[in-house]
Length: 424
Image (cartoon, rainbow, N blue to C red):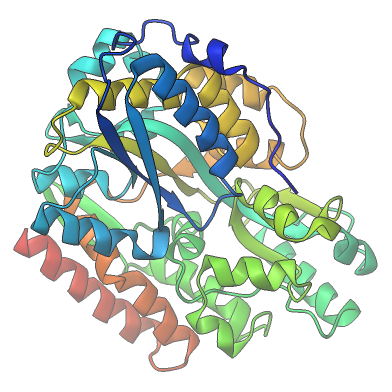
């Protein structure tokens, strides 16, 4: 399915910004701005960036070179680029990476530019916090996302499930009903290489990933609450048989493949996922629903509120052009168009309010999750190192594979995290 287009005329798009830093038409003549954009979770973004490129080039006279980078390879590509000086001018940076790259001295502080545009108070606070390092804002929030639970509406109907699970016990009951009605289908596969699928259950049980005291961070994975959440989540596979042993090495792309192929009935997924699923398999249109991640006894389990920043690397010689591109992407019609086409939420409060006011059944549950139970991972550059090491994913895989008990796996992961925190 081709992404929906808003039909922005190029001439209008080039002039659509209000308060844009006025890189005068033609002042970028002969210049090229290189941009890295992540791919691997979104619908095909090529048509969107064709529009952006045309508008940018008409406005500035400069050439825009958009290069797509797979999320799975991006961290290593950034790390290599930082050490070797082979970085783009601007890049999409995951929110958990921005403080790490800022601490490494690779990014430009955007605080003054954002203040000059009057956007400071309109940014989604969690995204602004995630881009902050030592009181400087090193990533302009571009879009936001949150994970909830996607399900096959036709499978729920055949299993006689008429009410969405509102507690952990009800989630188990739904899985058991699917097992009985569709014995060849996985009710709820647990991906061993997906930290963000696990986090809601740690938080839902009242636990934390790490805690901070007087500027010092410590792993919280060995607490009773964290272990309770880990035990429930992994137990969906090891105790209830809702998953498959093969899923112990899956990442989120593998979950989507399984769901799209009709092999799975539920999965943890982001609000950007339905569009990508339907694009890959049009037969799914009308057969996908969503509901927030339930809490143990009601309410909602918090889910990671993430997204992406647009950051300027300090190796650029074209900072003004780079900022013009960022404004083009994050304000006005292109920001709205990206949200419409990708399924991501906007990163400004004013635009987010418009989304939350809608009644799209594939949007409203995610908007509820984001508004009522969105949470961030530890906001420290060191957590980016821990994520790069895949410490929590390794813990999850070891439990799912039966290589370690929950107590052993959490002890190992906590020690690895604390070594990073102590090493600074």
